[in-house]
Length: 195
Image (cartoon, rainbow, N blue to C red; front, side):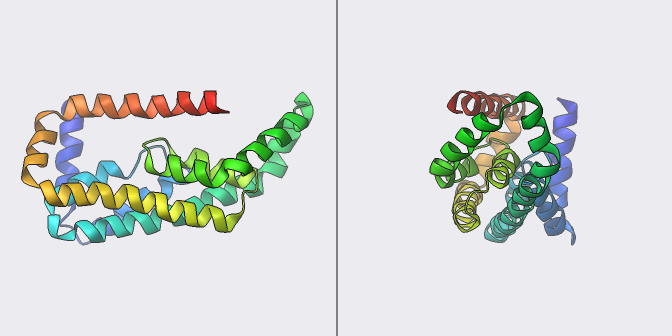
């Protein structure tokens, strides 16, 4: 619990620093392609510490996340031939993968849009979109809309409710963290059973 509190206090202090936006952008970019920690861990305390910058923070998160999503798409697209395809061939799963890719692309834009709003690790969706070669235009639009909704909704609620939300988060930080991780693992389980 002490680690959570110190991380929270550190990010609250970060909002006033000149490099805060760069750190937020780096986390949002990395979360969409290679990193497991969502940018909300920085976005929420930063908005609470500087509510007048809520829309700027949400905009930076959105743009960086979408750019990171394209990087994740590139990882899935470029590394599938060298890593993924030989594994599928070895286990004779190429036909099953082609069925999966067809199903994914049939619902791909909706999958990207849905999971882009949830706490589910977005990099899983971006890399899968590249592997299945989901139409990149659909991917980009779905990413922009879903990530924008997610980050602007979080920032808007924090901007509107302000200090009462801050007190609530600080009072219940441990419980909220547990709920967040339950939702995160629930997303993994849901994705496993959807596909």
